[in-house]
Image 1 (tube, rainbow, N blue to C red):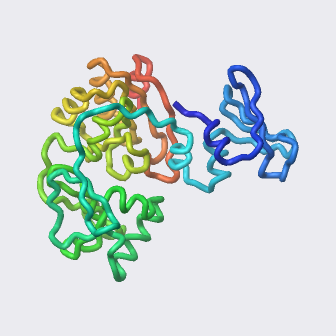
Image 2 (tube, rainbow, N blue to C red):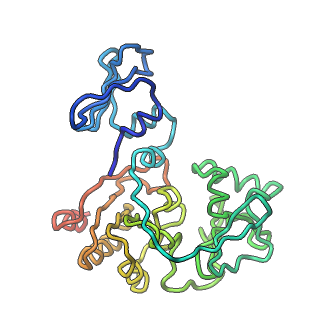
Amino acid sequence: MFSIEPFVQRNFDDVRVYGNPITDLRVNCPQCNDEKHHLHISIIKEGVHCFRCGYSANWFKFVMDITGYPYWRAVGELYNKPRMIDFNDIVSRVVVKPGEVLKMLDDFELPEDFINIVQGKGLIANSARYYLRRRGFDQWYWNKYNLGLADSIPARVIIPIEHGYWQGRKIFEWQDPKYLNPKEPARNILFNAIALKSYDEVVITEGAFSAMAVGDNSVALIGKEPIKEKIERLIDSEVQKFIVTIEPEAFPTMGKLADVLSRAGKEVVLWKYTVGDPADPSGTYIEMEYSLKSRILLMLN
């Protein structure tokens, strides 16, 4: 699921490859200005070590040190995105502002004064952009997911979800509640549900920002409790493999979801977060195949 070789090939010149199959890569160490390929990157042990200056790291820390990315973006650099599958559905798209922002049409009923966050002006718009950038979501995300603002929903980032539903996420700590919703959502609502038709491996998160952080093949439950209609939608999809992200406070509910998907014949992998969540720059997790052993571990936590 994770591979270091594409990252190394993209970021280093003169990469030397050893083993058949490959056991390690060797490059010049950026920590000590090495010129004789003393930095060894182990494919088997998933570690990195320079035999000149002594620098050592696992793959994730190595990517973070090279790029300056937070942990979740380092995960994205190493995570092998699954292949896309062919499907016949035509996804309609419309230009929100000529030549600028594309928005997927799915019966959205956004606030009448909604604008993409790129177009916002003033203190609130600047604060919203600062909030998103601080979390690692730059203008590429604003355009891709049509994140916006509305004067009628002040000081909140508007996140289009699905079926006429959106969320208004607070940008200041003193605000309450954390989210404002236009109405009670449909019971089967999912963020980025098109991933269920596009990929044969899909990551399941709780919130929309977590799904954005993981990538195109991630859907969000928009809540901690996976209710019956959402589970049925996941099971009825053509997705063969699900990766269930489990945040520290959601072990029981997301563990049950993993169990249901496994019993329905889906391959299930867990990303059990010991700290934070997929959108948290300090988030860390353990990956495990879902099994009787992992089920017991979930019950004990």
